[in-house]
Structure formats: structure tokens, C-alpha cells
Length: 187
Image (cartoon, rainbow, N blue to C red; front, side, top):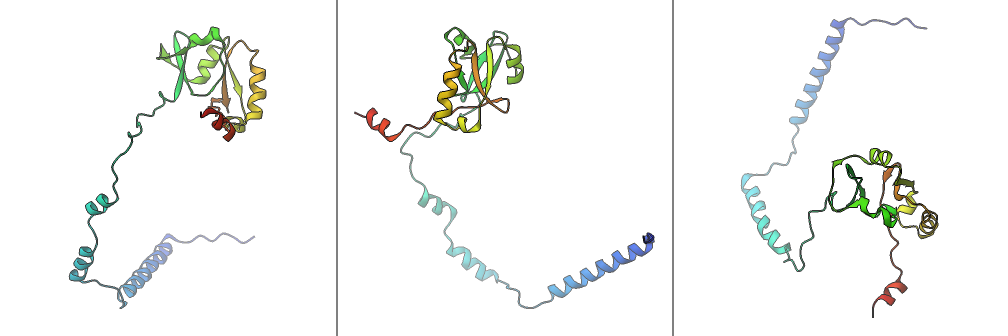
């Protein structure tokens, strides 16, 4: 094993100073090189005059609205269902409720009632009438075979069941209608 050599601070400063001097000389050499493109002010004004203005570009590309503009008021409230127990409430995404018995429909509220609490606390607090069912991600994307099997098993439960993924409520997408279904729906 080789012994460790210590370098004196004065020597480090000298090496650093030599590096700075060398870099400065390199920059000066690059600045002195001929061949840089220099545009005269007159040539620059001619180039700018040839480009259409921003206002003319926008009016050329703008089209009048033919339909009503989409709502920009999309928010957590508009995309959620409020579950309440009388004192506290929580939010779950639309499409997260897997099973809702008729006698528990009063727990789905139109407006918030009481204090807000996060999902894990609300679930623990109301475990007598509320349950969570962990679902695979493929089911949340609309897998019909998994959905049928799951819903068949849940129909016997007397609690309100919310779909979760990694312990958080998740929307279960409904499968898109097939072409044969859409043809039957239109007269």
C-alpha cells in the first residue's frame, strides 16, 4: 500500500491559478478567430421586414368558434363523489363505487356535510358500512371479464364498496360499447 501524500495548499492554489490563466488564453484565442458571421443593422432590418407580424399570423390561423367552449371549471369536486357519515366527509372519484346497497344511498351526499377527512381515516372510521376492494390496474382500465367476476362476488355484501388501487380510491372505466351495440341503439 502506498503512503498518502499530502499536497500543500499553496501548491493547489498555484495549479488552480495556472488553469485559469490557460483557460483565459484559450478564450482570447477563440475570440480573435476570423470568420464570425456579422449582420449589419440594415440587413437585419430587411430580414425583420420580410417576416409577417404576429398579429397577421394569428388572424390567418384563428377560426371562429362553432360550438360552445368546453368548461374550464373541471375540478376535484366535479369529478368526485362525496361520501358522508353525518360528521365527516371524503371524496372518491366518479366510478369508484363498486357496490351501493339501497339502504346506504344516504351516505352519498350532493354537498359536503361536516369536516373533510382523507380516505384512509374515513374508511377506518366507517368500517361497519364502508369497505375497500383492492383491484388490479387492468380492471380499472375496463377489463370486462374481471369486472363481471368481481361484481358477481360483491353483490352479496351489505356494505358500500369502493374500488382501490394501492390503498387509494380509483375509477373503474366501463368498457366501450362494441359496434353491434351502437348499431342497435340507433333507430
